[in-house]
Image (tube, rainbow, N blue to C red; front, side, top):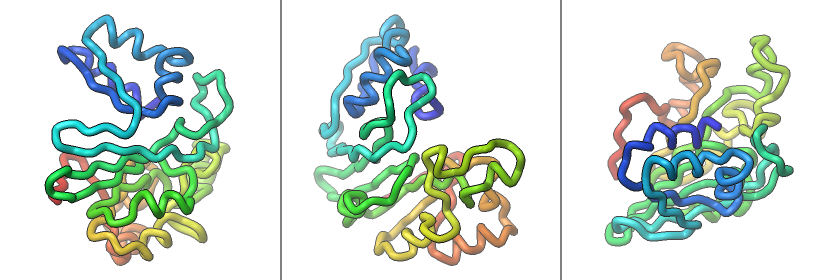
Length: 204
């Protein structure tokens, strides 16, 4: 929901070009008919990965979803969650964006290979973060997010990647890496991973 609801705030545009997986297209035209509402305000052009636009090659990787959105009438399926790779047709510079990361898989390694910047899901620090705070009864992995810390966490994975810039995004307000003096933030920074912030510019 939090990755698609923002489309409604773009409704005053004359036209929108949406690039998505077939699974997301199905969700937004049936289970959660957001596209139907948007089409009342502006012209919609939509494409399925891969495409090229404004000199940028845009490709997607369908990730194995552990859960389906609550509004979906379907079981979890590949394409509900996707990674995006942007590559300059002339410069060859590339960025991979993984705001949701349910699993760290082999094909993910192939998808990010050779990129100049990797932006990764940093929602939770620990698997039981929300449970320990009394906010939820579900684990991070149960909500579709690989936690940063702990065995099998994304920080261990990022440490071993030879990528110039690695950045955490989509950080929940319960995550201790948001506190500048926390031990968890120091561990992230020591591993050479940046923490995104509002208004952040990324130059490649």
